Length: 81
Picture 1 (cartoon, one colour):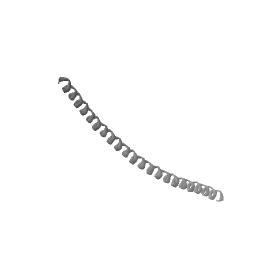
Picture 2 (cartoon, helix red, strand yellow; picture 1 turned 30 degrees about the horizontal axis):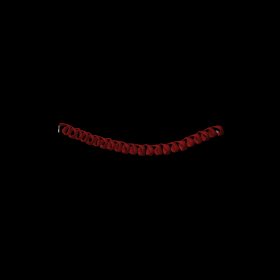
Picture 3 (cartoon, one colour; picture 1 turned 135 degrees about the horizontal axis):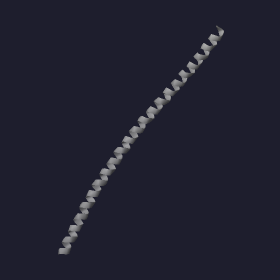
Picture 4 (cartoon, one colour; picture 1 turned 90 degrees about the horizontal axis):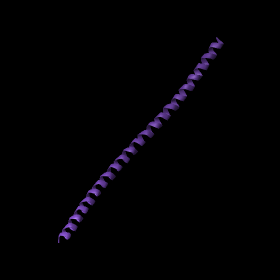
């Protein structure tokens, strides 16, 4: 009878341990999903910022070209004067 009770006790401990492990694994999976979601959001924001930077760089390039043309015109007008 004592052996039977010990086996039952061991089975109960094993069952409780397994249950706790399942709960822990579920928490870990939930945390992983949360972090992956945050990562996707951050990557989307980063891509938007990269697009904005590219537009700004194109605009700056146009402005610098205009500046260069203005300088050439100014030099040319000085030569003519």
